[in-house]
Length: 250
Ligand SMILES: [Zn+2]
Ligand SMILES: [Zn+2]
Image (tube, rainbow, N blue to C red; front, side, top):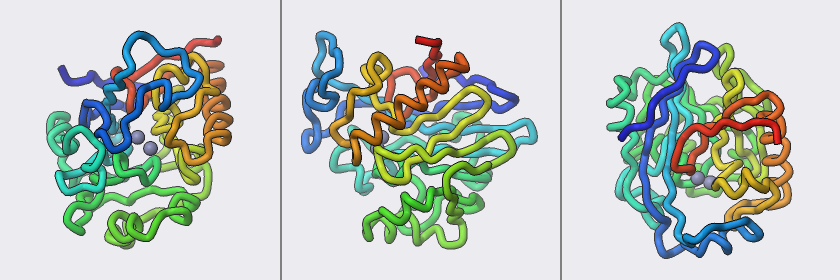
């Protein structure tokens, strides 16, 4: 059952389900090890969803947030459950890759960035690709070579807060990676990997094993969730089973 779209501040937000499944054995750990100190239920198994999002504003302009796992030979293939289905998900909502006006990559991990360039060729040929400068500065050489350089002059580097389109704004949210960014539309924040699992809603201090800087990630998460809760807003997550989660003041 495909996830349904919602409309926020005049922008339609389509969840695109790139993949569903557990992490591969190479990096899989029981949940209490992945999220130390979190309050876990019966199951130790984490079935992740991998969500990208397509935003379409009232003028018909489109912004893709994250590009998913990518094809079978993607670097994410070593740990992601299946190849990414972003292409067919985009087709399902009636958008061709050429029609995408802008791509925001929340961070350069292989499950978020690997659908942008396939076989050395930019997939979203007419889109600018928005990155935080600190993410590019911290990127490994192989990631620059595979994802960033092939985009050529489609790369748009920003520092901190910036408008992608009027009303669609990125914010620098470091911790999971140095240049992680989220996207905000009205009271909806597309959180990338600032929040990985619902246990971190119950307690935002709970770190994630694969956070680059767990303390900074926790501080960023607390600040962001508090801000969204204060506005009775909503988050759109990358890895929860349901794409949208309402937040009300604690
Ligand atoms: Zn990540
Ligand atoms: Zn992720």
